[in-house]
Every structure is written in structure tokens, then in C-alpha cells.
Amino acid sequence: ICEFGAYSRGEIKELTQMIPPQYAILTAIGTQHLERFKSLKNTTLAKFELIDSVKPENCLVNLDNKLIQKHLNQNQYKKVKTYSTKNPKADFFVSKYTLANQGTDFTLSHNHQSHHFHSSLFGTSNLENLAAAISMSIMLGINPTLIKKSVAQINPSPHRLELKKINQATLIDNSYSS
Image (cartoon, rainbow, N blue to C red; front, top):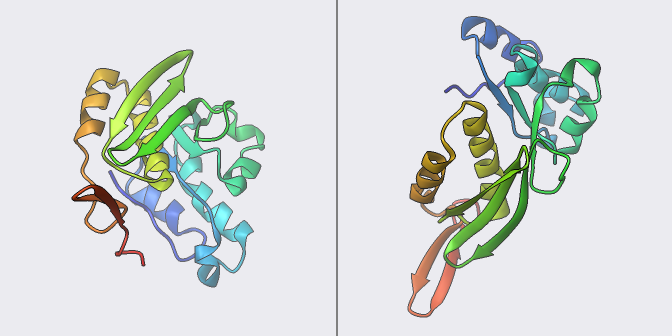
């Protein structure tokens, strides 16, 4: 598993030539890289260099991200798989979820099947990451029972939306990002 990052257009394409990926996940495109890419169009084109380097049916993208959604309208992306916590038209859809002081319970639907998961991770950002990881795991043919067991064993990173029990209270420790 590799994470590809870039400072300008063409760098992800170059990385994919050095380390050719078989599968790809695109989680987001946003304004955080404008100082380097100068425009959202350049950022989008750079990030899609990863998607363009893999067979479309082996790609997974976040349909909730407006810039990804807009770029998907091009013909070459018809076979790209999508995941979402908001859009039931996605190939993998979090059809319902509950955030509680025990973590997150959610249902992921795909191909008329639903799988229920529990994770000690908290927050919608963690839910989006879990949806991407689970969706790719299903695409790779991993048994959903094994995925459920693995998701239940994930522990939060310290101080990143970490739920802490203090007597009868639950503290959400997000001090890493604060």
C-alpha cells in the first residue's frame, strides 16, 4: 500500500510509472493544496493521475466530494466504483450510521447486500475512511466476516477523535488537531 502525494501536476503520474498500482482510492480533492497547484482544476487533474493509471473497475472514489463527482462525468470514468455516506447512488453506500460513546455503528450496502459494522472509531471523518477501506476490501474479494472482525479491532490514534471514559462522562479527545 502506497500513498501518493504531489506538489505539481505530473508527479503522481511519474510515481505510478515507478510503482504501478493495481488499485486506487481517491478520498478527496480540496483547497488545502492551492498554494502548490494554484487552482482546483490543477489539483483535480493531478489527483486523477492516480485514477488514470489503473483499470477503471479497480478504482474507488468518494462520491461525496463535489470536485471528484464533477470530474467523474467524463466517459472514461464510467466503470470507476464510488463510495458515499450521503448518496445512495454510490456503488458502496453507508445507508445508516450511529455515532455514540461506544464508537460508530453503521451499515454499508453494496449490490443489494447490507453489512453491519461496529468500530470504536468516532466521527464522520473516520466513517468516511472506514467506508473507503471496507469498500476496497470488498472489491478485493475479502470475506465480509473477516472485514467486520478487523474493523471491530481498530483502535483510534491517540488524541484524534479518541473517546475517553472519565467516570460517567465521555470525553472526545481531539487535541492533536486543536
